[in-house]
Image (cartoon, rainbow, N blue to C red; front, side):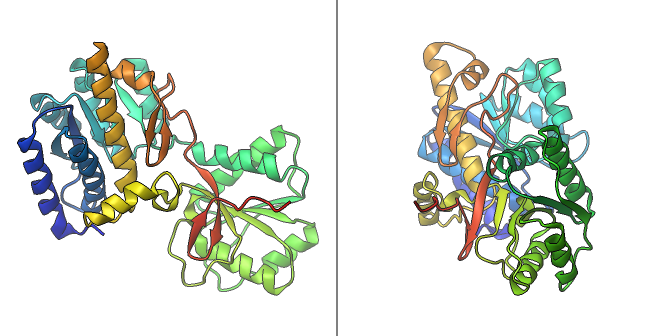
Length: 360
């Protein structure tokens, strides 16, 4: 785990390494170094810095305050440092001010966090060099819809949500897509979140005939619903969203509950080697660490390929598929990930894993 006291030491080590071999591709890493977002910033810096050092590129660390009107200063710092590409960018406030100047300097920006649809629309309209290595707004709902249409189309489906803005909007997007495909849920409802038990709800699901239920709510509510359905001998296949990636408490999640969520890359085949290498250096591969390592790998390889071919780096980003510890990364012409990073996962033991293949 990276703590606040380790941030300065991490930056110092990476900076010293960069000065020692100022070669290869110069990559700006834009992330908070202090304040309430410093821990997330440390994850970005640690993952990116590890890859940049391994690849013998040069790191330029730029502090991100995430304040309004702070982006222009970030862009000036990147331009003055003569970076060829910049990654990180936890906050849309940074990008809004930085992108016009980065366009003038031909410096692509790869965000590992910002999901704003409007910002990307503005970037494409204005020719700003923004690339998103994070899920786009709407990607979670799109994957949930894909899973339900593929696996549940022949079954009686229920859609329930907790009344929060995210839960309601996510479930409504799913319902609209299902009805457009000719599937009408047998039961829809808004439940009261944070209750110790949900027996009345699961009994209503049974009366409606539902055997599959999508829950737009948090992990603790899903755990309560799953427990009470099991206690009442009501067979329910349960699917949740990315909110399921939370602490397994106070009520443990039942085995077999599924979620469409971003995976823990460190436990997946493509991420284990990088995770082991990070841990050997005292870096826990949590949060943004592996996605930022992947973004740095993409930036470095794109920079090297562009230099070898005598092409603009942005053009190389658009025309290449990069193999990384979070899977293959390629960008569409709209500068989005070509593959939806959300995956169908299943709770087993102490983590979410890809569902086991069905037995023959």
